[in-house]
Amino acid sequence: MIKIAVDAMGGDNAPHITVEGAMLAIKNFPDIEIVLYGDEEAIKRYLTDRTRISIVHCSDYFRMDEKELAYEIRKRKEASMIKAMQACAEKECDAIVSAGPTAAVVSGGTLIVKRIKNFLRPALGPILPQVDGGYMLLLDCGANVECKPEWLVQFAQIASVYSEKVLGKKNPRVGLLNNGEEEKKGREFEKITYDLLKQSGLNFVGNIEGKDIINAKCDVLVTDGFTGNIALKTIEGTAKVFGTVLKREIKSNIFGMIGGLIAKKNLNNIKKTFDASEVGGAVLFGCESVVIKAHGSSDHFAFMNAIRQAKKTVQENVIPIIKEVLAKEENENI
Image (cartoon, rainbow, N blue to C red; front, side, top):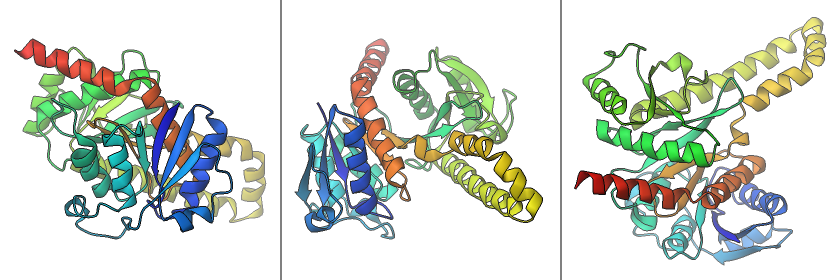
């Protein structure tokens, strides 16, 4: 049985959505137990089925609009996210899922769950839907504003393990986000990274431009956290605007509404293809336990999928395999 710690107070709509997502996960996955960390009374208002679900009361939690959370991690020991992470650090739980503030998740994962030996820097890796119906890992997306080329190579190595074991990609294709496809494009940082990836033994397919991020050109796409975060937010914003404009045009006249009804199934398929809620959340790579950062605005279905993602990552022994890869690399460098 896989035991998953859930930060029940994390996110824009907690604990309502997190509790509903946990109950939905229990219904769908008979091989998991869930521990909800948060305000017990608030949780009980929404918890209508306690099958394989327990509660650990916490008197504090991180609000989504708080600042300087990286400095609060060591101080606020009663915060729901902290107590859930502590349970993972002490091996009481196998994974944690939180929709709380990204800064707190990254800092807590690094300082409390702890970083894997020889892992250079933690990296946040969301899974992006692709035009062919598949998925791609993009990292880093915010854990490190500035990166070194060797960090990106390690990101690519570790993400390739995840892509193969969890996403089912055989010999995952690795790309480097850049401002052109040519080998010598980009800043000195991208040029050095390109050469290192080329020599890494990974299935490196070269530079990927921004216009091709969701065009199924690779299975793992690496970049620095600053660039990755902008790319991710741009894609999310564009998808929302496109959806809004499409609805407006369909409703603008009778012909549009008739066409919308005729194409309803096709439009729903398109929506499902690019629906982030189908994926779950972002993985915080580099931690001793599985850490999943769900989107702050997740609904109960998206949060359930974040729990599914945590379960699958534990089942496939991703962290032990990552440790083996890093240990082998260390031995080869001695």
